[in-house]
Amino acid sequence: MTKTINPDVAAFKDDFFKGLSFRECVFGASALLTGVGGILLLHFYFGAGLNTAITLCMPVIGIIGLCGFYHKNGLTLAQLVRRSIKLMFQKPYVYETRNQ
Image: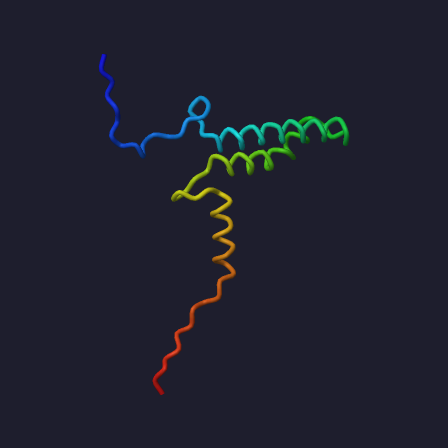
């Protein structure tokens, strides 16, 4: 039996669990735990309705999930946000001629 191996090693993804990388598993689990904990806390401790608790926790769950799964040009979401903030506060370059 002969198995062919893809010569393009960069095409392979680092699989940790069921096709997910370790980073994706960690952020997925933390989003799940944060969501369940937040919903239970809001519902039972603060007395919010179940739909209200879910609606309030959805943005937090979404942001944590995006931090683990979103990549653009090899950068994670946190790195993109950091670079965008740096870019907004960057001073413009001024050209000064030395001729008089």
